[in-house]
Length: 243
Image (tube, rainbow, N blue to C red; front, side, top):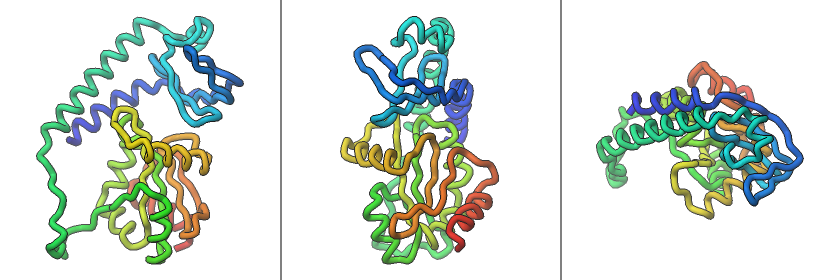
């Protein structure tokens, strides 16, 4: 599984060729027109952007000839990149399918005292805030693209999936994952709720981690990947909250 993860991660690290942060008053893609556009990432095949209504992406081949030239579109390179992406996705899904089935734990049995805690992620902020108030904890929001964002995947592997972070979170945090997948089906209601929170908290990149108190007040945020593993992230959270 780890090899598959880094194979996909390596592909996207190559594919994400530019972070543009270039602004357009309007952007026309086919029959759709977007306003107040900021292009954040340009690859050989796509542009990814935020706009007045949220987030979007478009195939460069669907843009006007002028914009294709502006974004240095090369049909041959685009075709090669799409082929690599298809191969990487196929390999990833083959490895996922080959993993043993993980059954949910038997909650009727007492957990093994020697087993490290696992980080538990909610998907609803209102419920998380209520839990945080009742347990005297803080809330950590994780705005992520779990199946396409290379830095999200890397940080999850190096920090959020570790036993050290899970132990820390179990004592001090209620965790909320706000996922924006591109290859995985998502419940429409959850997708809409996540989009509303994306706009409410003025998120403009992935990953973004925001620490809230139990009333919903922002205490601090980390935008993007940062090295240092769980020690560095825990130190940063403690600095936000003065725990």
